[in-house]
Image (cartoon, helix red, strand yellow):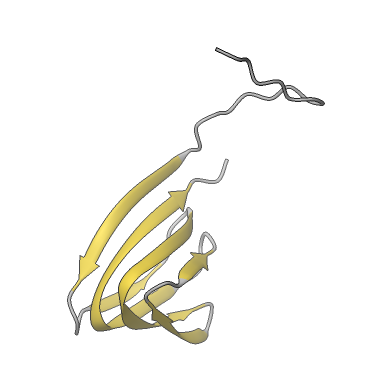
Amino acid sequence: MERLSIQGDRRRFQALPATVGHLFFPAGTVLPETRHEEDEVSFIHSGSLRAVSGGREYLIRAGDVTFIPAGEAHRAVVLEDVTLSYVLLERE
């Protein structure tokens, strides 16, 4: 097996302190305002929702990727059935 060589700093891969999940919300679901200690990245696979985050309103659809910084209040209403995957990245 050939060995991979990296020039410069020799760094090792390390696991991220993160939680990963997959969710489904039917149309009409109201997601109440919440905030959490982790940064959140979500990948919208299908459907649409109207969300408010950081005081701004967004229409989010399939194919969108969202980022919510730790501590930011956010809420949403599901307009069409939504499936999404998320990553919560813990702050060190």
